[in-house]
Image (spheres, rainbow, N blue to C red):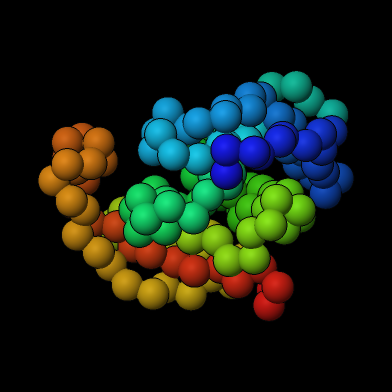
Length: 155
């Protein structure tokens, strides 16, 4: 992906929430291997972020097995409205336009909200894997990841 060129998407919206590009990183500092779009999630008409969603644009072993293509976070005070699932649905055309047809989303087994988000958008739980000891996630105390596959052309 060394020839990768970022695209302009403007504001991606569904009329309730907006995705606004916060940053384009040629190499994601989290995995050091792939470009990433970093979006703020805002309520439509607001500039105050209620969360964020990242899209990693690579099919490296680390992304597919442990980090996932998508990472999302919603502020505690804004949870319970399915904003993460809505943001994933909004990011789908960005992924498709970047050549990705299958996305992997990972989460900790005890993160039931994230697991529910994956189910809502139509992901399939493939397996729960042990994290290698040499990963940052392991060093931070995480031990396992649920691996969900999202077939973009089927949902």
